[in-house]
Image (cartoon, rainbow, N blue to C red):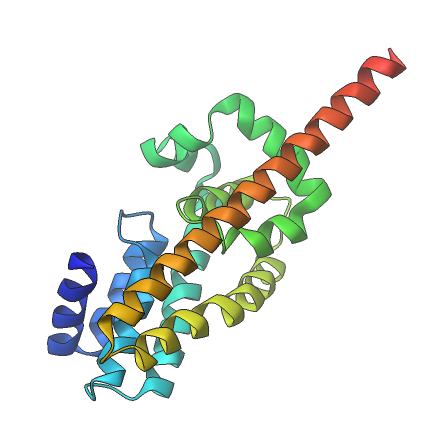
Length: 205
């Protein structure tokens, strides 16, 4: 909650522009949790420093611009951006080749669910652009559809919990745990699909 309090103070002093810029940094892969940033934006609206509906619009645009920026970096700079340390650590060359095939098969689903995977969004969006298997407008549509679910939840959670910090902290923790649960389930499904595919290949051989 220390980070949340610092963000609340910073956003209250600097307004919508600060929230927008912070979300761009989140999209760029900096170690600033997007969910906490969104909650902080909602809190300052709940405290009367901003209008919650304008805040929702600002955060939606900030999230989408940040995501689109990483996608376009991958699209235009391809393998060069994949050498960036945070991306290279998550997406080494061997995995990148496999991911290209996965985007061809499951591109729509990967783009949608990536928004709910903390710590993975930047690598997935950049790789999506680099593979050239996912068009920009399809990416933006799928990412926007997912953001329409996640962004209002976090912003309005902050808004309604602005004066109830213990309650807010409890729901932030529950929300983050739910995201990690979703990530775990998706990883398990991916492993099962990989195992089935490998078994089919071995049977065919």
